[in-house]
Length: 203
Ligand code: TYD
Image (tube, rainbow, N blue to C red; front, side, top):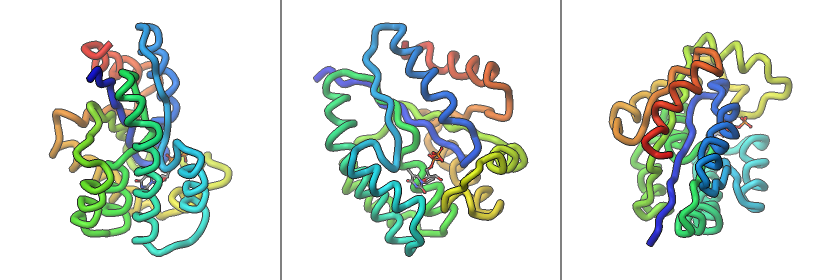
């Protein structure tokens, strides 16, 4: 099977990962690859409806986790797996590391719960590369305060976001081969240089 490449982008709200998604896609397209840029929660018509609920409707923390994994199951079955089987490059703005960071780190859910959902929904599939856009608490707060209409996650207090950040960094030290930490406090140009160094072997 000619399996493609699965790349995920992660980081706290305000880390700037979405800014880099289109540019990353262009780097692969310039090398003749077909790129499927997508996002979570979302990425399918049903997933986008679940995203709207997740970002705007108050709910129990476990309901939140279950809806995120329901959207993820749909995303994997309808978008990610078919694209990888067709040899495409899939770049997803967030994936399961976000569940460990937000639901476990941020909301305090035991990791074992998310691990159970992960093994059910992903059946062993993991990203080939995860780019973790890391910013200090101050930079993230400044970027978030520029958002006009904050969603349920963006409305959380600064200590929630700091717990999310620390949970991401713990994942990165646990999976150093897969998760690469990008210093995203710097200018867009500087971040792109770091990304190119990491991507070169894959292009
Ligand atoms: P985000 O990706 O930051 O989108 P935007 O840039 O449009 O605000 O928003 C998605 C939110 O969903 C983000 O605040 C984190 C949350 N989330 C989780 O809590 N768990 C998850 O597993 C995923 C994928 C996202």
